[in-house]
Image 1 (cartoon, rainbow, N blue to C red):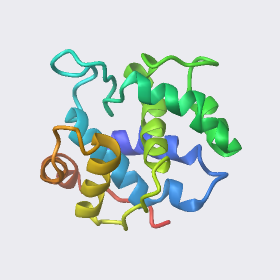
Image 2 (image 1 turned 60 degrees about the vertical axis):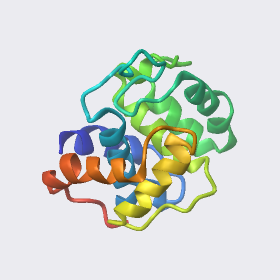
Image 3 (image 1 turned 120 degrees about the horizontal axis):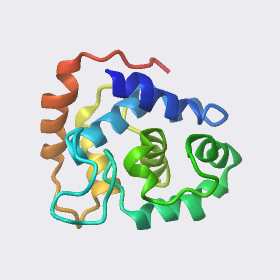
Image 4 (image 1 turned 180 degrees about the horizontal axis):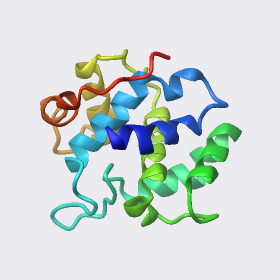
Length: 164
């Protein structure tokens, strides 16, 4: 509950100058579900020694693509990026300790895709989007893994999602 209220919701609220679906309940669910799947809400550094960092286990190359290319395409994204970072030009390691920036980058990663955001409570749709966009077809994760993480970590918290 605290991750949603104090990290994810404020991070997505930074996108308030963009379309309303960017900070919708469905977006909150996708970002929370991604963290649950990627780190089980407890790992800050990728298990096994990989390069990914933070609760959303984002790799530096993805972060730099967001920072150096995509965030500059829309002023509201660039403004949200700047408002969420601690440094004027953040580095990927900031994702390990700046959870607001990490949550925002997770949402932006999905925004970079042409896939449509699944509807609120469409967890199977979110699992599919996670697999295609975040984990990628080459990744080891499976849609069922996302659903399992949702059912064991997120669903028991009985969170209240935005109705935007």
